[in-house]
Image 1 (cartoon, rainbow over the protein chains, first blue to last red):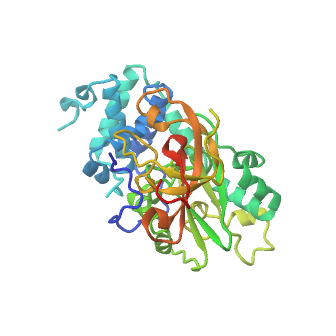
Image 2 (tube, rainbow over the protein chains, first blue to last red):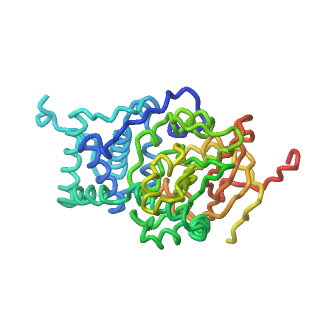
Image 3 (cartoon, rainbow over the protein chains, first blue to last red):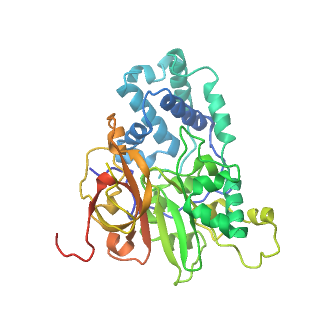
Length: 100
Length: 197
Length: 96
C-alpha cells in the first residue's frame, strides 16, 4: 500500500522554496524533538525503521500539512502509545496546565 | 504544504509536557536533551565536504581513492561518518563535463548529517523529493543551474543505508588558488548537486 | 548466503506493494535496472520496521534509465535496494 511519504515521481507539488540563511532549527521545540527521538532510539524504546514507519502511517492530509519536526513529534507520540510507554491521555497537556 | 516550520506555542507546550513525562519515567535523563542538541549542532558542517572536494581537485590519486572507498579516504582528512549510532557508508560521486550528479531521498530525508551537518528544508520538502527524480533538468534550472544538453544527469536516491555526496567540477580559472581557497568556493548545494560548485 | 548479484547484472525490481514500511520506492517498482555495485550488507528495513530480527542481506546500487522508469527522460536514477527487492532479469529477453 503506497504511503504518502513515497512521493518520488509524483506531479503537482509546487516550486521548490529555498530559505536564505536558514537556521538549523526554527524554534526550540524542534531541537527538543530531534534530541528526544535520538534519546528514545538509543534507549531501545523503538528503532529508526519503526520511527520512519510511524511517520509514513500518518493520515496523508496531515502528513502534507505538517512541518518536518511536526511529523517527527507525531511519530514519537504514536510510538510511545504503541510501545505502552504512555497513554494518549498522559501525553496530552493537562487542561488546567494549558492556560486555556 | 510542509514548508511551515513556525510552531505554535501549543506544540511547544506539548513537547515540554512529553519531555517531562519521559524524564519522570526515567526514559530521558535530566540535561540529556540539551547535551544531545549541543552535540548535534557541533557535529558536521558543509565545510567538511568542501575540504574533501578541494582535496579531490588538487590530488587525483585522492580523488580515485575517494570514489572507490569514501569512508577510508575521508579518514585521511580526519573526517568520518560515525556521528550516529554506527558508521554509515559514504558514497561519493564526482561531476564531469559529461555527467552531473544530484542527490535526493525520495522516501524520507536521508542525508550525510555526520559529515555535512543538518540538511536544508528544501532538501526535505515533498516538492524536491517528488520532482528531482522525474525532471532533474527542470529542477536544476529552478535552482539556477542550466546544464548543457550534452551533460547527462544522474540522480542518486538515498533509499537504504548509504549516504551520498557530490564532488562538483573545479571552476575554470582557479589554477592559482590554494587548497583552502578552493574549499572556500564549494557550497552545500554544490555538494548535493543543485549548484555547479 | 553468498550475494545473489554482481556489478553489471540486470535485475528486475519487485512489483509487490506491501502493507508495511519498505524502501523500494513506488516509482522503481517492476522496473529493470543494472547493478552498479555492492553497498554492504544490512538487515532488511521492512523486517526491522515490524520488530522482526531481519536477516542480513546484500544491498546494491541499482541504476535505471528514466525511460525505463517513467517512459521518457534522458537521465538515470540510481536507487539503493535490498536483495529481497530484486530478481534476475534479462534486458534483451522478451516475456519471462
